[in-house]
Length: 67
Image 1: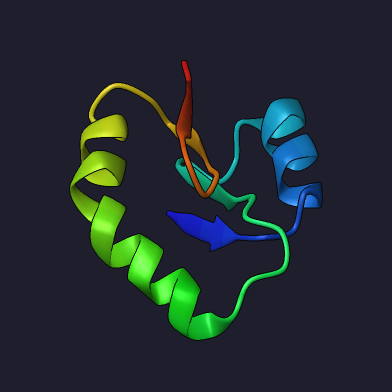
Image 2: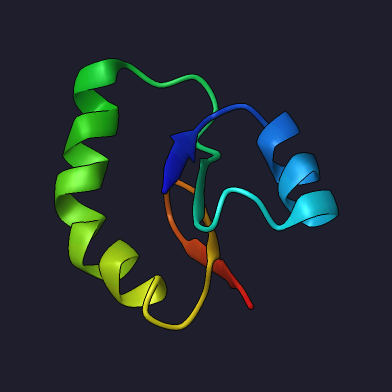
């Protein structure tokens, strides 16, 4: 699994289906402490999303699960 804020990974994933699993962090500018707190709050949701998908986009308020 690759965790990134770099949108280029999204385009590469669409073209090649690689990496096998991708978590795109789309929170915009955020302090590291706030980002870690979001991960703590949403970790169970993120794990559940990857049981049904290989690509998930992580926003501050919502997870978008791509099939």
